[in-house]
Length: 120
Image 1 (tube, rainbow, N blue to C red):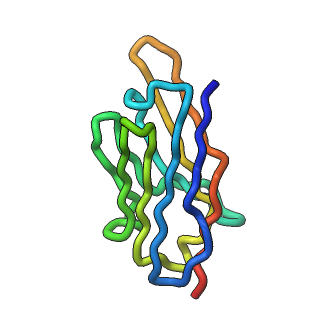
Image 2 (cartoon, rainbow, N blue to C red):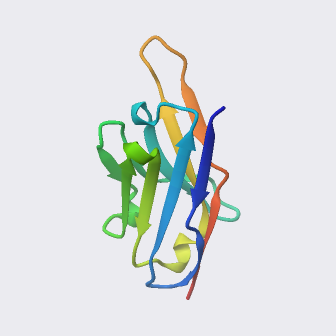
């Protein structure tokens, strides 16, 4: 059974930092592309940052220079270091694991979400 457990959310003031973690179990983590998404009230879920199984990263323009995604395959964990936080970063943050093997079935898993609230 696949489980993704997120942690690290909370309430911080603008300009502060948080680090989110997402630890997976029940899968071969190193073979999955991983990412963080967020959803603010009344808005669609949006991509924040991704890191491929090979370690290539991609960030949304809105977080470039402030957020850093990383992974530790030995710990089955993906991280999101968030610095210089702004009130508009307030959202529920979700981790995602994706595997699309050639000739195989797509496997797509989501964490339960962790609330991040930035006060002005």
